Structure formats: structure tokens, C-alpha cells
Length: 95
Image (cartoon, rainbow, N blue to C red; front, side, top):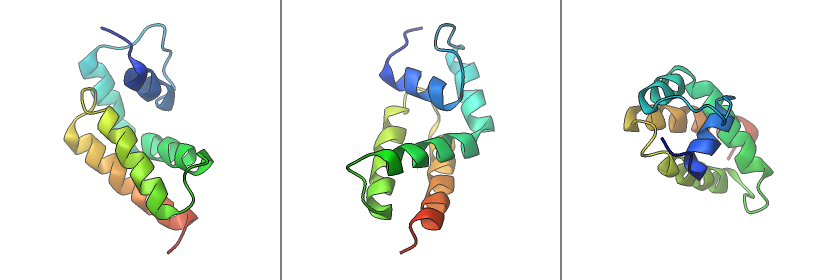
């Protein structure tokens, strides 16, 4: 299994060692079991990014990152993470 940038990013968000990446199905199950962790990590990254200045920008940032995970994480998991992230963004940057 290769360790491309998207996989390394996902491993870091899940706090897993990049040196010994889990199998694809194990990575999906870990991601599905920790959507809150993934969402919180992505929201933190979004608001730390100089290009993100508001909630809408944070949502776009997260949508882009989740799209990068398409080959690693199921649509259902990505949708769940996006939903949690949207709620976290609303807490940090209310409209």
C-alpha cells in the first residue's frame, strides 16, 4: 500500500504512525469510528490556514480535504465528518 499525501494526512489526523500504515479497510474502519476526531482536526487546520477568513472558507477547505480522502474513506464517513465539521465551524464562526 502506498503512502501518498492524502493517506499521510489521514493517518496524522487519526494520530496513527505513518511508518506502518494500516490496510485500506482498517483505515476506513478507524476513520468511520472517529468522525469527531477527523472533523475537529480538519476544522483546526482550516482556521489555522491563512487563506481561510470565515466559516464559508473553512467549509470549502474541509470539502477539498475530504475529497482528497475519496479513495481512502467511504462517502458515508466523509459525509458524517463534513456534518460534524459544519457544526464545529458554526460554533467557532457563527454567521
